[in-house]
Structure formats: C-alpha cells, structure tokens
Length: 383
Ligand SMILES: Cc1ncc(COP(=O)(O)O)c(C=O)c1O
Image (cartoon, rainbow, N blue to C red; front, side, top):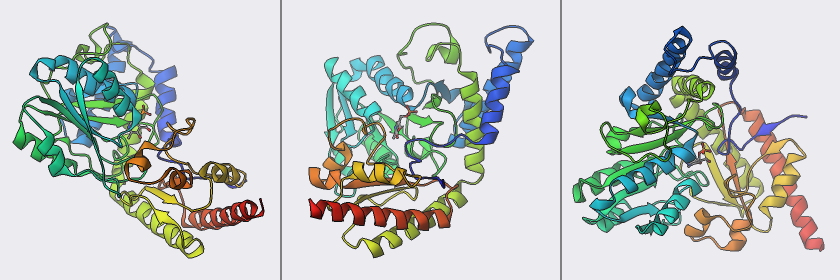
C-alpha cells in the first residue's frame, strides 16, 4: 500500500546516510572517547567532528555544544540547571502557555522547589507578545524560556525581539529557546537572539531518536542533572551515545545543505494542501498559520482521533495534536491557550511535512482526507 507520512513533527524516518554512519560507529568505530588508546582516539574524533558540525549549524563555538539524550533532556538541563545554579539571583521564571511538555512540566517541577513561574498567554494565532514578556521581567527574573516554532500549530515566536527586550530590561536574566521544531528548517541564531541556552533534537530532522544537544553560552555555569564522570565538561556526564551523536551530525549536515530549498518546497506543499482541502471543506479553519512544515486545522463535526485511524487504513499518517499528548484524554493545552473550545480541539488535526513528500502525495492525501471527512459526517448524521 502507498504510505504517506504526514506526521514529521512527531518524528521522521532516519536517512540511509545517517543509518550507515550509525552502523559504522556501533560495529566498527566502537571505541569509548574517554579511552586513552587508538580506539578511544578515533571515537573522540567522531565526537569532535559531530560537535563541529552542530556548532557551525548554530553559529556558535564548539565548546558551547553539549550532547544529550534528546530535546527533553536538553530542556530540563537548561531550565533546571540554570534555575538551580542561579537561585540566589532571584526566584522568578517566565515561559509561555504553549511550550512543549518537556518545558512546561520542568517549570511545574521548579514551582515545587519554591520558584515562581509566570506562564504567558498567547493570542489566537499562537503568538506571545514580546513587549508584554519584557514588561514582566523584574530584578528577580532569573530565566525566560520561549520556544522558536510551536510543535502543534507551527507559530513562529518573535524570539529575537524577546531576547533583545528582556536583556534591555535585565541583562542578568537568562534566555532559553527550545528550537527543536525549527532546527534544520529555519535558521537558528542563538547569538542574534541573545539566547544563553538553546535546545535541538535529532529525530525531527531524519536523525535518530534519543539524541539531542544543548547550546550553552560559553562560561555560563549550570548545575548538572546527573553526576558522574567528566564527559561534556561534567555538565552532562555519562558515556556518550556515540551512534546517536554521529547520526545527529550527519542528519544536520544533510538538512542544512538544503535548508532554504526544502523549506520553500514544504511551503508549496502546505499551500497546495490547504487550497485543496479548503475547496472541498470550506468550513475548515486554520490554527496558527506560521511555519511551512506544520499545519493545524479544525474541521467542524469530525473527531480528530477517528479521522486519524480512518486515514491509516489508506496508508496516510497524520496527528491529532502533538504525539506527546496523543495518549492523554485532556485537550491540547496549545489550542486551549489559543482560545479554541474543547469541541473545536476535538475536531483538530496536525499535518506536518518533510521534503520527501511529493505534490502527488499531497493531492492523494487531500482527496483521501476529504473523502474520510464526508464519510464520517454522513455516519454522524445517520446516528
Ligand atoms: C518543541 C519540542 N520540544 C522538545 C521536544 C522533545 O524532544 P525529544 O523528543 O528529543 O525529547 C519536542 C518533541 O516533540 C518538541 O516538539
């Protein structure tokens, strides 16, 4: 059966070049980079090269990149690591209501440690007001964390403006950006954004799951989450996931070599998708139209979950919201924050593209989605 995978914000297929380098690192170049002998040295070279690739991709220094077990760990390390290290500066933290759970629940955990967190509202397009965030910064504000691209609706946050305004208000306030959904698609520029910390992850860019990295501005001390050896300058101890690191770097190199073209192409896919669907389903509503690779729509009268299962029978994979939420019954916190009702949220779908999708795939998916919607609507009317 033809398979059309339109859930690339949940995860992506590993590219053959990535799998090949991982296989080589697992089976042939398998040394521990901490070993003194040649095997260790060869592994160390792989790690250094991977760090160089990621540092270049982010426009930062090699020693500012720290390998982690993914975006979740990097977000935890950035936020908890900074909050715990600098708690004497003040106990106020700021974030938005539409962050990924690995950010939101990290802030909740810090509330239990005595921190006070301001969770910012977003507008109906999923955007936070940069000036309002800056106004909320006080002498007590230790850290602000705002994502670059939202994983459910694709809204692109004004991170450069936020970074600049919060630093004007309080130069001591640290700024963290979760760039998991933008890395490899849009330029990520922690220095331009005045970000002290930034999170990226491999599996959203055709790299392996369980591999990510944190950019940490040179010299900024963080309290580690884990204690152990002196790997990653002691900030992230533990024998490195060498296959994951090597795979991440190859995936990043491949993505970045065609970043602008691929992004433009995904924008076209999205346009064709939207035009096709709007023609057939004129009552459809778009939720937060920002990044080219993510589309979130509400189709009145359907249940997103039912549609997801109906479409998988045709080999089409889409999502109801974020993958992290899909096993929970509660409605999307992102769409709720954007003012959608629980009924609208139940009728919402996320479609996320990759450059491997063809125009023909999009036309086929549009036809199948509208057919499935009509069938479901008919069935509901008959009940
Ligand atoms: C915006 C965002 N942040 C963080 C993460 C977590 O990254 P990982 O799956 O590598 O832990 C995700 C994954 O869905 C995400 O979309």
